[in-house]
Amino acid sequence: MILKILKSIFLTILLPLFIAIILRVFFLEIYKIPSSSMEPTLLPGDIILVSKMSYGARFLRLGRLLNINRREYLRLPGWNRIRKGDVFVFNWPKYSSVIDSASDIYGSAVVKRCYGMPGDSVVIKNEKSGISNGRSMSVEPGYNDYGDVLFPHDSSLKWTIDNYGPLFVPEKGKSLNLSEKNEQWYKEVLLFENNKDRITDSPGKKTGYTRTQHIFTDNYYFMTGDNFYNSQDSRYWGFVPEGNIIGKAVFVLFSSDPQKSGFSKIRWNRFFHKIETHSIEFHKSTDKQ
Image (cartoon, rainbow, N blue to C red):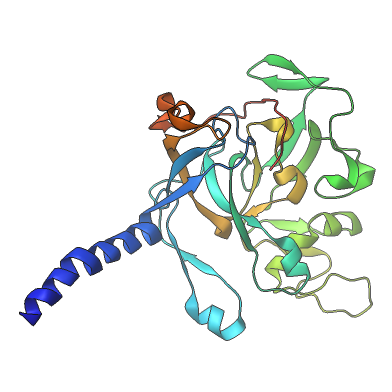
């Protein structure tokens, strides 16, 4: 009798729970789109399926967490490589926590499109307007953010959100010849890769790397929203470390319009809508994330 009860508990509760945990950790994630930053590709209220195995599932290195109180992940081999134009979910990089000597660079989950790959030189040049597949879109005068608001937060650059760059995206194994200028541009990455050492002008300060050159130990990505003029993305907070990537956005499972109620809020035509890899589409809306 007891064995029957235990078997029933195992089959009805423990086994499904174990399978759900395995699927969640290694294969799939569900993510709800909170804002318009990825319109028209993804709409507020979309619930998307995220494939962790596309780029390789990651799991927490518990020993590192216990020994040095720093959250790090190991990544399994993936089914595919990241491509420019892919849409993926990642932890927003909390570089400020590195600078403040905190242990966690993994912020809340967000979704954007990959605009710059490791080793790329990111350049955004749009004369008077955004460019979408050769078509012009008007932009209100004075709408663009500029100067030290934008990454790398150097007002002397005079960059705007649609007149931006060139900016090198760090690639693992590539070296960067450091100058006073680009040391500040890449300050957050340098601090992150050198165990939160400080960059300072004080003589004799040890930073964990030479002052003349740094070799990057990780790959980074430059992410932008499809709603190009209304998206908080890499143009504001910088590069996304590869370790922050959660998985590839595959398709929309379900969608409901948060502005409507009842059955009218359900967007039936978006069910199982595939999320395509393509170049950035510029789209204008009213809010940022």
